[in-house]
Length: 192
Image 1 (spheres, rainbow, N blue to C red):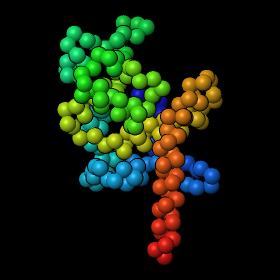
Image 2 (image 1 turned 135 degrees about the vertical axis):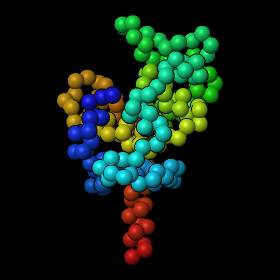
Image 3 (image 1 turned 120 degrees about the horizontal axis):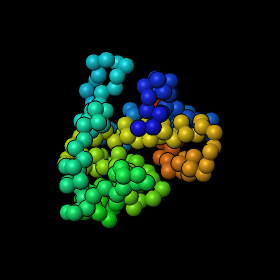
Image 4 (image 1 turned 45 degrees about the horizontal axis):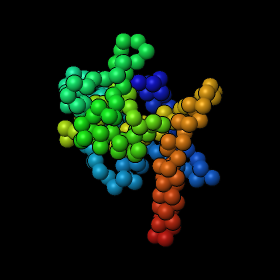
């Protein structure tokens, strides 16, 4: 995971941005509300620690059997692709089962955006597998986390085009949240 997932960064991160003078919240609860409350998690016993869905708990513990994931989401005889070293780094869309490929395309266009959609990092394959198996996934938390990564990347000095391109992935969701925030403001003003 990137450095921006460290607890100290989470504690200081506000999940807030400003667009044309409007405050836009992109925390997990705001996104979950926007999506129509697809997942309601029980309150956490410790208010400083968020409640995690089944996928989130497994992700936090890094409890993934990649052998089983390969067997379940890739076609027979297919494996992860190797990176520059000998370590497995990506899974190819062309090597996925129909169900996994469908879920992959949905994820890269809506939840975990990428600039290319022919491969996915190995770190995303447990999410594809978990959805294929019908497991509980808090999509709002994933979107919020990815937006946080974008915001933190913007705080870094631009080292290359990657930092600029990274922002473009979430332009649509930021615009949608802006309109959602404006419409909520209008609704609240009408109710007064």
